[in-house]
Amino acid sequence: MPVVSWLLLRGRCRSCAAPTSVRHPLVELATAGLFAAVTAWVAHEGRWALLPVLLHRAAAGLALALIDLDVHRLPDAIVLPAYPVTAVLGGLVGVALVATGVLRRRGHLPFGPFMLVGAALGVVAGGGVVHWYLAMSGYPLA
Image (cartoon, rainbow, N blue to C red; front, side, top):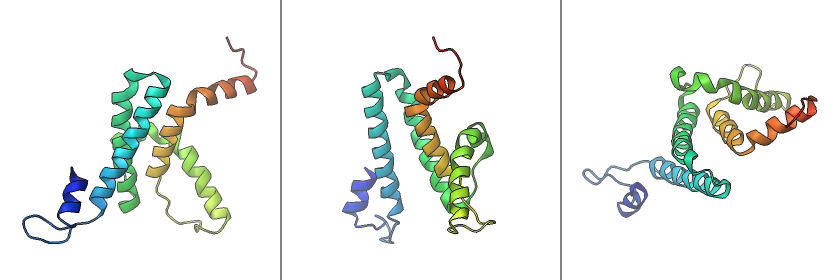
């Protein structure tokens, strides 16, 4: 509804006609896209019990990623448990950006987007990665 409302009002406030940011409908569209992708994956995997949790994580993850892009800060109570997952992905990208000169050594790199991508990769490919790792380490698989 926010997207339709924004379009009908031509990006202006209903009561005062002041311009409103296009960011709001874009975030709504991105959330809808994430919800569609998560639901499609859950349907493909047949893991319907995960749907509410994954939809919540998708919405929260998008919000955290956008907040981090804006202010380079995230609430510790929400993100501390997820640090090990994204730190790896963000660290790899950070090293690559510094090595190629895109990012200065003391530059800032928001970790929120990498946490979101890392969480999504964990959900979609986590089982396969664990299986690969255990097989590579010589751990006997059942």
